[in-house]
Length: 129
Image (cartoon, rainbow, N blue to C red; front, side, top):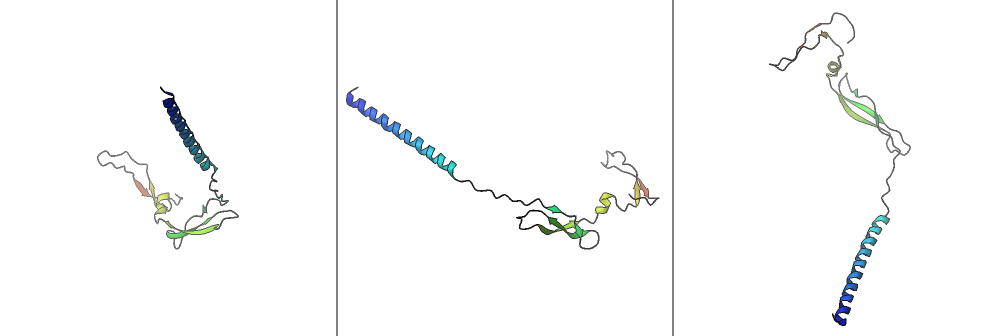
């Protein structure tokens, strides 16, 4: 290899090496710039969780009504609010209130009908269910 070819290869290698260093420096600078950006400040609120009262029906003992919510915190913009709610009209039956019958235990499942049965009789005493 001649001296002139050797010098050309050396210059090409030096140019490629400098280009590689330049690219690495640019990538490192870009990543450093990302790290230095200030992160968004998370505004911490001192507001507590909402605590809700029971639903109070507008009329009667079921149907549409309202409930009140409250929360604590010195910097809370809203510490009390009212929300609409609904009480199902069959809730007493679901919880056994106002029982008029006394039920026996459930029987076995009938494989033909896929139903269970139980017998009942009118309640003889005035004991609360």
